[in-house]
Image (cartoon, rainbow, N blue to C red; front, side):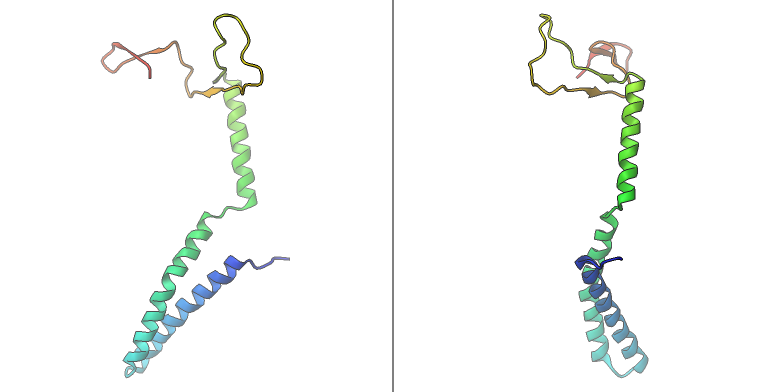
Length: 131
């Protein structure tokens, strides 16, 4: 069973206030001799508009559990793809042959293209130092 959340209730109230203002403006326009009612309706509609906008923006920012799972699977697949192509480069080992500090986190850098040394070709064909 689907439960109604507080955000859905607030969004419904915001839409109702906005629609009420539009109805007041429409009725006052149809009657022709009710400028005060039209002003009140326009004020109510304009007062409800920011809340309608906020409800729409919040709804756009929510993603479903299925979308979250699809994003997680795609990230996992990309990680496996990078590992299979050898794009995950482990950190350099210390030059003295000693092992890394015990308990330290292993940092892997992810490169789109495997790097060769620490120099790259510049635009003018000359070499420049990589940053």
